[in-house]
Image (cartoon, rainbow, N blue to C red; front, side):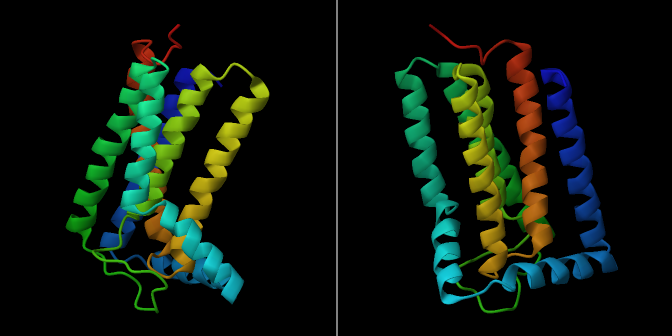
Length: 212
């Protein structure tokens, strides 16, 4: 699949699935509760003191201050190696689409799960800001890696680690019972839409090519 097709696919798939979940939630579709209950049962079936400790540690990576710190470090690193456009790409994704996530969350106003929360969580539930932020950050790094890392091994390793961390953060939000699975999935899809859009724009103007 060509790079342009990957970008367009990300936008179309992300936006379509996000809208399906959003419209279904607003219309109280029965499949939402069925899907959420089923996934929660699977995730919580591995509950133990050890997995709870691990889940709390993983979910803390997606906390706002953690993501802010990671974004600052990544941005400064990119600027230090003279990859200014890559730094801008990361900042645009984190600022614009994270803000959009917050706006949608306030508009939909879905209450969080009533089960015991294993971490402190405030505000509304849909879509998951941790999940959206994780994919925006680690997804941006993965896209940047495509352009900056020449070694196939190291490029694939970086992208693989970014994908695993993103998925683990999303799952951890379900495990600690502060989000429904559809919150997490919607957060991922919203971020995927944003990544596809920004990647398409930056790539169209050759703004992510490696600078010497």
